[in-house]
Length: 98
Image (cartoon, rainbow, N blue to C red):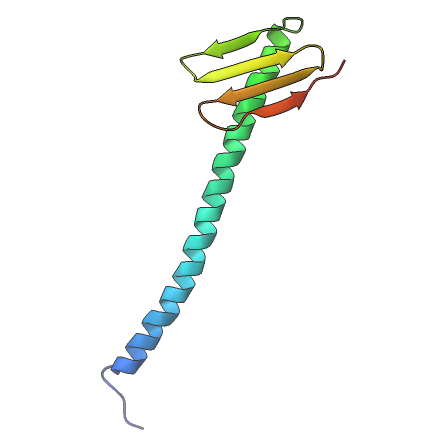
């Protein structure tokens, strides 16, 4: 059997196509995981501020806005609902115990 010294063009194209398909899957997976981590971090941050607010101001019924953080916390005491929003994102609503 004779040893080949170079690959053919067809073999090179097939290996590049296979590598491209595999990398497309890897990049899609990585982008989904990065997006999930960002959403989880944002949610945890809003939960932290909600807990901090309820610990420091348990009986107050007003809107707290922080321009440094871009944070807005509003509480509806009649329904025991706390809304926390940061920046232009959607607010997270918490139901507080009575």
